Length: 192
Length: 192
Image (cartoon, rainbow over all chains, first blue to last red; front, side, top):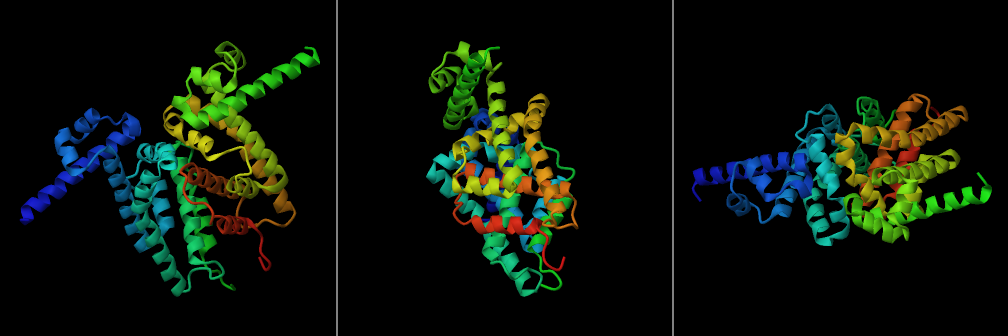
């Protein structure tokens, strides 16, 4: 495929994802109708569903997008930094989009295929988190009395709590020291 | 008011709450129509709304009920025990009801009055958690380098993560050691 065409496809895909993220965030999963997705992306349903099979695939592509961006931060700075970015509002994951992630919880719980596709997309965040922790362990910065798998699960559970907290619009200006506790609890301490 | 009548009112209120919890859990907040609430409680809408002003009040009464039960466990055994109970499925908070709590996140975020009523009801859990931590500190079991307020926020953030995790039907059979990490991270250690 010629280069220009591939660039064009990628730009179009990005345009759809950016518009859809705003649309899902604003109207919720159910409320993001095809009509509203057309308005938000500035593209016809034909163009949108040329790139994404259906609304579910579009939503899952956004979840994968989140996971990929977070995995990049994790690789460089760890999962606690992802949380600090969320807290600072520095990320491209505003509360209304985070809320949409919560709204699909019923679907995730009751639809094994949907859950499977979601889990597959989130997998890269888990892998990045484990890799980062293994690297920290080799560097001697990580506590060594608990397995890396458990520590990865722990950090991801806190991230889920933070996502839920922000999505509910609960006060978050005092959570910075809480994240310090989280970071400290996976670290190796002098004398350990 | 004669005793028998008060008992009757309390029993009726309990009957409504129990039925409504199942109904919200099964159909979600939006899906729990008045018709379905009648079926689930075995009572007429007149009887239901004699006890609770509207659906929102009924839902918030359930959230308050949750907070009260959790606060009882917190007072005796701490917030990590609440999480262990949730994990073991020993509580009266099955995943589908937990999911309904997530589904109202948009409403919580965008409707300050609703958020205010929710926060008021959840307040007793926060108070119980702080009281328990203060007591642990006086007993010398709590780390003393971090304020009780921060540790309470920390534990509540993890609880939010667990609620979200269970509501999404994600695998939870390996979370017991994660809760050990959480418990350990607020404890005082020998040599501290």
